[in-house]
Image (cartoon, rainbow, N blue to C red; front, top):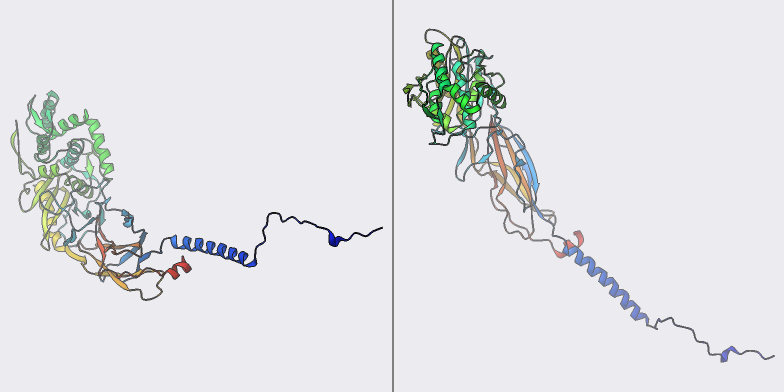
Length: 499
């Protein structure tokens, strides 16, 4: 048997499609793969946004005044503006909204009446008032009740009988207020006409029998809304109070319900109305509530204009005189008086006085004054309070333009040192009207914004300084004293390492 000699066999091994390559080729392929991955990673890192610059507060210096300041820092992107929640405290709004002083001016916490006295001409809904302790040394009445208020900050000081008492014709302030809410009168307008009917004539006859204040009317007489309000407020005509109530609501009872609803909405918690004229002793209020109502009513230009008339002319009645003899004299611009045997003499007066050369509106309410001349006594007491209060008031500048409140730094994540500090200061001044016991609150709202590294301009306005006293809030801008120097953008190496 012969042996098989495998040395002469031709055996073919399949290569499965893999060519023979040299070692160098495989190395080059591996390097190409690694470089591709590296390029993708680097591109991904460099495509990310460059870290932003951040203007942030460093520390607070305070207000350099006797009033402390609180700091509130809000962070927003550079392309967004901070919302008005920069003032977390209640707007004084319900207060009036915070306003900024025009450039080059000083924001003053006062207000303006229709005749130029300082007063907030926008009523609050609901209004906010701040009772404070009665100032000792003012000529408060020896009997009855009294209060004096400063519209704008809406601070009220009360003294004496503070409970609800009959208010007689002071009720007609609410009657007029409700009418003007339902039928507003723009400056110069007289409003729709009201036709006097037989019911109005009968009411006038009964008012005369009951010794209520009235004005002569005739059936078919046409009165404009403004004329009817003039007879109501200037000459205290009870018959026109009923005519207006029926014209507005169809019935007196519905109108009186509306008066009481309005009182609740205005926060007159101690006030109740039994009729539109005030003849019933069940119509009651307090001096403080009367000032609240007068403050809101005087913010209506039509109301303020009417109560400032010493006389008024009506078609049938002719010329009628105001029962408040002080109106038109010595800065007195209204408002209303009232008298019956239950209420005795009561009055609400509004007058302009001056504090440190600036006009201020003051409103005084006096109730329950007797004697031989109840209305005269009530008016004299109210004038005494109005004349005496300005000596206890003064204006104080609490924020000065250029006053430094804090420092800020422009932080760049790629710079670990050399961050410059920038003064953050008030862009304008704020002055306030102060009274004994006043406690203004100052809040600093810093807006922490981010900027792209290639930004060429930093906003000078960095926030708001707000001052609150009573029901008033005023704000001025918080600005940088100088423009920050913009650092260079981060290097490519820093971005590769830290991106």
